[in-house]
Length: 289
Image (cartoon, rainbow, N blue to C red; front, side, top):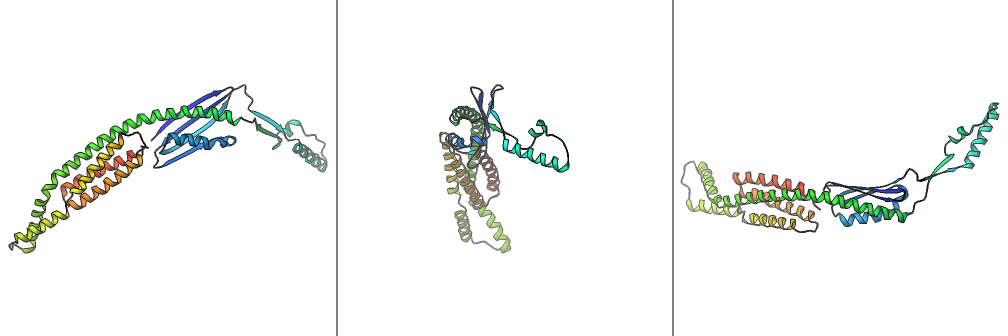
């Protein structure tokens, strides 16, 4: 789910900073951003994040800030290159017949004469500072995720209640279906026979066949079972996002079958509402680990 956390730890003149963001993702995708000379620490940080987050895209940024009095860089003079520049300059002056000396400020501006070399950092010290800052960032991230999770839980409960209400409505209408089929079949046969008498036994047989083929009892039972499982998963502490996603797929399949088998306008309208609720549930489940 979408959340943000940050942490900072002071180590002498150096400050270790960590920012971590998480967004919805079907699987776990962890991106760690470190300066090039610190990338040896990446796998350790990735493992720490993986131990706290099981689903979602996570981006973690690590950086250090040095105090104003700290000398974090050194300058290195490339004397061989400077000599080469001077030699080339003198050759050019002799060739052109010019009598001109190269000034120091001109030479110092030539490419690669001065190399900026960062002072070596103690990786173990960095790891200690970053570990502490990462722990703070993950705690802040969890706090935000818990708040959002409680809101999502309330939304789940509301939508599950609505789905159960729709299932009750279908269950109430289901016993009326044989009579609806009988009337519909009688009208169609009457139109085809053009007023001729309909064999009651034959009609009853066809109505029974339609009622058996259109029986939605199993679908109703399975949908209720899936709804109960969904509620049970909401009460456990383990990551359940993928299991909830699977249940929604199964419920959607049962609802589609229910609408096809019932062949009834009233139930078809309820099915449309159920599919809309399931789609909203599916979107919210992407926020759940």
